Image 1 (cartoon, rainbow, N blue to C red):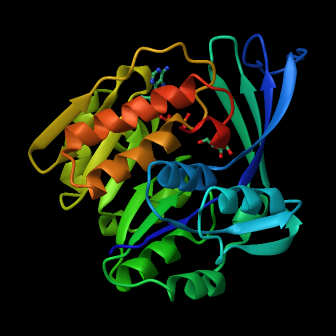
Image 2: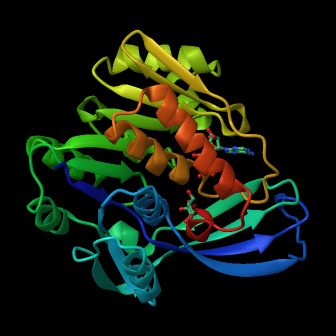
Length: 285
Ligand code: ATP
Ligand code: RIB
């Protein structure tokens, strides 16, 4: 049985409801503030277990981050490899507008303290055939990717949020990419979804690529195969963690042997439920 390791961020999200996303130099009153557990890593672990998979989460919490470990435990995630650092934990300031658009300011905190020694301790527990899921909110990403690949792990990467750290990674070691359209455009320089996929596969011909397009649906590509699933029509209130929910449920579908199209459809249904509820982790069905 393949084991799944999700090596990722753990954040506290401070979510402010606003009339519109703040412009430079502007001051506005927020309508409410709610504190949610979040972080792409934590959200994806929650999505994986709620989709019915077993997952071990590795990552670093800071002072006051115990509630994040507790939440993962309550959801049945194996948290035995999570460690604590005596420093502020990862957190975000998230604005959510009336139109459900969001803007996220991320402070990495303890997520940025992941180092090679910790990565080695974690990866020593996993080996050939196990799956490693990564996002781009922790430090030492290039090292983790190389070491996991050397141990024979299959690597899934959601390179979000996209920045120069992703480009420092040997992306040819990745088996499955989950990109959104912004990340796809940043890497390929094109806005057209099918062209993004073609360019990605030209660059990484051994990988499969998922490209999510928000309310416009999602594509899957591998070699010359393509599959598309539209998004569900729902009233979105907060799209935070749409991509995280999608990733967890898509992996469930694929590991269950569903076709890429059925896996996309399953993931789209789950993500549609998530966007119709407020918050990140608590919104994941
Ligand atoms: P985030 O960073 O906010 O977690 P993302 O940018 O990684 O999300 P998106 O492409 O926005 O990911 O969304 C992922 C999937 O979630 C989409 O392919 C779609 O199935 C679903 N989704 C997103 N927004 C909506 C929406 N407004 N209505 C219905 N489904 C949505
Ligand atoms: O993908 C959503 C997540 O991104 C939020 O929970 C926030 O913590 C940011 O990291």
